[in-house]
Length: 177
Image (cartoon, rainbow, N blue to C red):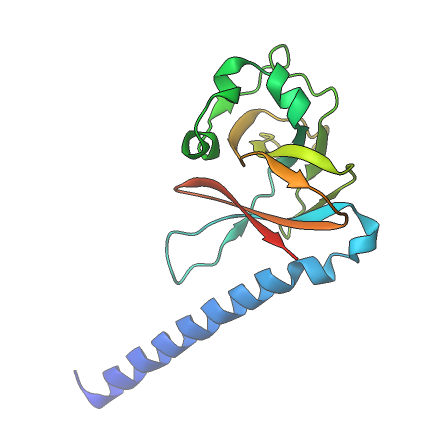
């Protein structure tokens, strides 16, 4: 490789690194710019994890976050209650309002920057991500396909920051102090 080609390759590598750092910085500051924690009991971001290191994570804009109280979760059937944590993270299930009613479940639309917020009480919840099969401008935002859930989480104090990530290994959560 001649010096000119080496210089171009180095510049491209530096540009990719800078873009990667900038996308991480943007993602980490999303919750701070979304509004104060006093505005919502639970708030955070929901992103699809990129499996390519140089590409940023993508906001889950066609999705909703569901906060399912654990007592409601138990009524959704033994097949969901007894599922392992790994399988729960990767749970792919078409929404069935007869088997999984939304009574008592709080839903929050994920905005174009991957942010969501919701009002819930303290208690035990399973948080799920569901595809709505609609765009941000469509209404209503009802779940169409469950794409994965967290294990049971205990929300003891509010406000509560909870980021959700969906990737090859399913849904993972990041609790922030």
